[in-house]
Image (cartoon, rainbow, N blue to C red; front, side, top):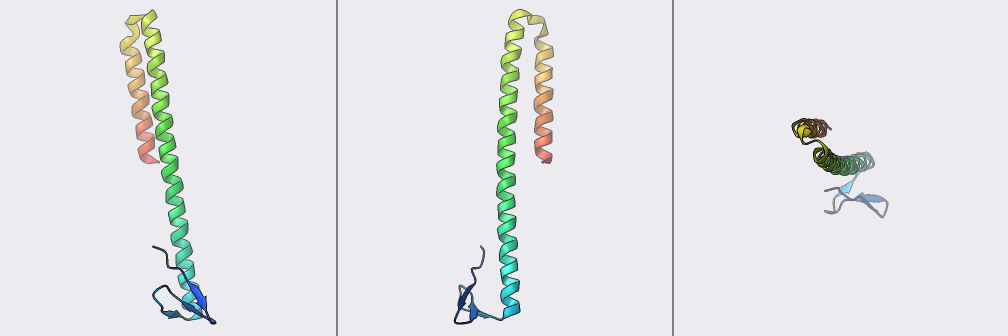
Length: 99
């Protein structure tokens, strides 16, 4: 949890009531900003992972629908289509795990 630094009467006071000197106040502020940046970065990365997972699921779904349409015309290709889809899904999962 980030520490809010509140200047009161020319000094800097923490939430717990402690007073910080100028250099400590600057250090505390930098640390607070670093925590906020790490939190923001984590949130953005997490949203990106969720988006990519959703996109991968949609892609696999489209491939399955296409495979069904092709199987209706040529049932002999079912094993090939299944292999392609499984390979694509495995590749996507692997890439997502390294993101």
